Structure formats: structure tokens, C-alpha cells
Length: 251
Figure 1: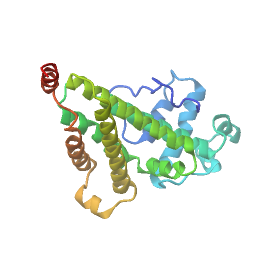
Figure 2 (figure 1 turned 30 degrees about the vertical axis):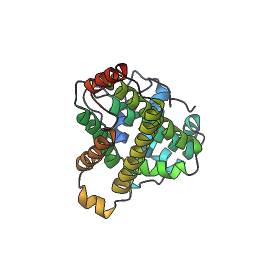
Figure 3 (figure 1 turned 90 degrees about the horizontal axis):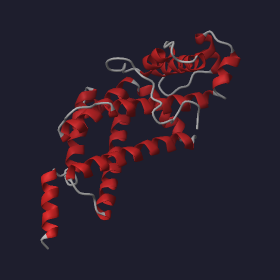
Figure 4 (figure 1 turned 180 degrees about the vertical axis):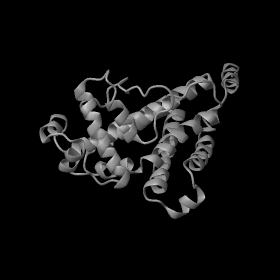
């Protein structure tokens, strides 16, 4: 496990209010927090510079020399934190996905089923729009670093498990093995569709998607409509779950 990455509950605090949309600003904010060890603050400062570079040059890593020139640090400082720029990039994208996942999960309070789906898609669409360069870097890294791809697959699997658990509680009765298998497949299909839609809209700038969904929020609404329809078969109210149990008991 890379240092400071992938540890449960290790999401750095963002202070009051919503976190900045640009991840470079989040990292810069963490680097200035004096309650953190100096080593950790230096690490976040280096990563914030790389993230800022990616906003101008999506998917293209800067050199170690360029990073150190901008940071005003020695070459040895970089190698105290990362073995090379590929590891630096892998740490950056892993922290970014963990941060987005944390933001997606941070919304609390009573919401309708549709609003819960919309809130999650709003987080993703706004994050993709603001940080397309980081997502582009992830796509490039995933072709040559299996650990980065496994990280994303693990997060997707955890999200599927969380959705299934929430829906099962809301239904009032557990899924059968067959229902669960079908629901898992539908959720993974929806995740794949969402990721590809976000990549085509914000990374590749697909002309049709840009015309149809000119803002992140408009795309989030369209994706949420599809998610809601796909989940309707499985996400029934408690009353339906109660009727289901009653019907079974009377057979």
C-alpha cells in the first residue's frame, strides 16, 4: 500500500463548507494545515503542483525537474516521497478518487430515492468537469499500472455493496441469491455507462454530448434518470417488502 493512500478513515478534513472543486486547491489547503506533520504537508504541496499542471496539460505529467523548480525544493526531497513520477501520479489519482468518494458519501439528511441518486451524480459530474486532467491521467496510468486499475475496481465494488445494503434495508427483506446477482450486474453496468459518459463529455469533449448536456448538472440529471429507472425493479418501498413477506407466509 502506498504511503497515506487507501487507509480507511484517512480522508483529510476539508474544513467547514464544501470542498473546492479543483483538487489542486484541496491539496494546497491540506499542505497549509499546520496540524499536519511537515512531511505530509510537503507531500501534498508537491501533489498540488502536479494537479495544477494537469489542468493546463490534461493527462501529461510534468518532469521531476519542472516540479522541483516550481516547488523550490531539492531533488532529494522528491525522492524522499516518491520513487519516480509514475508513483507520484498513482498517489495523486488514488487520493483524488478517495476524496471524490468521500464527498459523494458525505451528504446526509432525509432525501428521496431520486435525490440520493442525483446528489451522487452531481458530485461525480462536477468533479469530472473541474478535474478532467486528473481523470485523463488515470486513463493513461491504468494501461500500465495494474494497481491503479485495481484501486478503481475496489472502490466500484465497495459502492455496489453499499447500494445493495441500503436498498435491502429499504425493502425490508434481503435479496435472494438470484436477485442479488442480477442487481450487482445492473449496478456495474450503470457504473461503466456513467464512467464512459463522463470521460467522453469532459475528457474527450464529445461534440454531441457537449451540445446535449452543456453543464455538469445537466449531465448529472440525465444520468440520474437512467439510474433511477434501472434501480426501480430492485428498490421497492418497505410496504412492498411487507406485502412480499405476507404473501410468502400465506402460501
